[in-house]
Length: 334
Image (tube, rainbow, N blue to C red; front, side, top):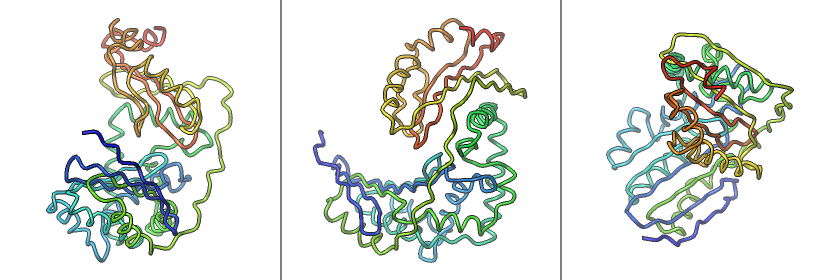
């Protein structure tokens, strides 16, 4: 069934951007709240703090105790989760539309009342260190960490979203609370709701719940932009792995630059797939030039490329996994 209803976008008096889109295909609604904070907003000493705060947002508030949150959502037939990336942290709930008010009340409350008990902070420290240890068993994570560290020597894109182990061990509860208080404010957030509702009524409800939250100070700007690169940089990483991995990365424009969309079209022709999704990349496409050059010739077991939409210039990456018995040099020469 075609959906010709318009998208409504407005800004509340406290600076919260609200985007609404009615879709009446099914009695379901999805609510998301995006905060303009990610690993880009971190400095050495607190790398990984945005991801850690995301974890703490599930520890509850006085009105929504952490040990009851999951049951409260699931018993209403809902699903919820969150994710952190370079430029943002986002939280979402998908529920029957006549129950979506629970999501609105929850997100409005934890924007200002999230609890971070000391014992929960230490518990999550252990969880996140374990998560990082799991990632370190994946050679692709290790390669990407070394790659971004070499590509960005000034800009905070140089570190992984999960953070450096040294920082994860030394960060304090006060660091987390400060980060939360600085960035989790309505004028640094975008609320998006799509589904089976009436726009005027929904907007009024969002204004009632979120409109009373005071705006915060403007987030500090990122002033340390990466200088122009003076030449090729190469990183060779040795370690246990079941295959050899090759990545060629090129500096790519920010999503706001006109050339970004030209590059996504180039990638579609060269590597296949779309780079217009949230995290970029389009997976393997057997009809792409890259696949035919590397996989069809038995040089690689897999090959793909892509770039993600970012606030500041990032990377366009071409990745390949060498087939058993073939070398990285052979793939690179192809």
